[in-house]
Length: 225
Image (cartoon, rainbow, N blue to C red):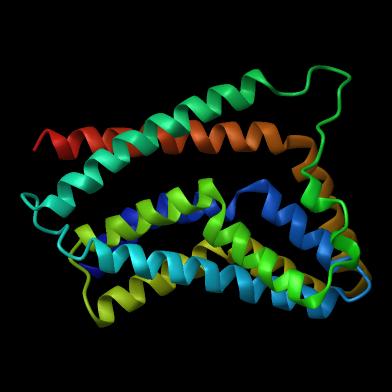
């Protein structure tokens, strides 16, 4: 059951990890005056937000491993809605992409990340992981998959921990490179940031469309049982 739970939540975990804006955000925070401290706090907030959201959803849908249960039906309908929303959002994002010669306007919350306070770094990490609408849906989808696989007690804890670890690998990786890489690490992270900024729309659209199709298909398959 544990391996099944991990396999089911893997696509959502990777989608959270590959989201461009958190990667850009953590790199900007790490490049600031208190980058070491604030980067660690952002990562702690990120992990906390994911853990709380995934655990709450997994516990709420604890009976979803029974295909005939109300929890299972709600989960399948939720997947249909979420999958459709991801597809629509992916098309909308592509339609509103910057045209040739235009530059994408970064979100307002990125404007002052180089001098963010310790408390704001912690809160921002938690909000981007646990309260961000896209990540919230992805985390809920992963946690529901864990519940449907029948993971309980130690298995549930292990599956949630693996999800959080995979979903946090880019944020944790950036912090590790900053702490151990010196100037070379800083140069590498700046290159990653520039790549993410330049290709954020394409990355976001691909993730949304692929994940949306997968989630919608799983929901329709579940409702057809």
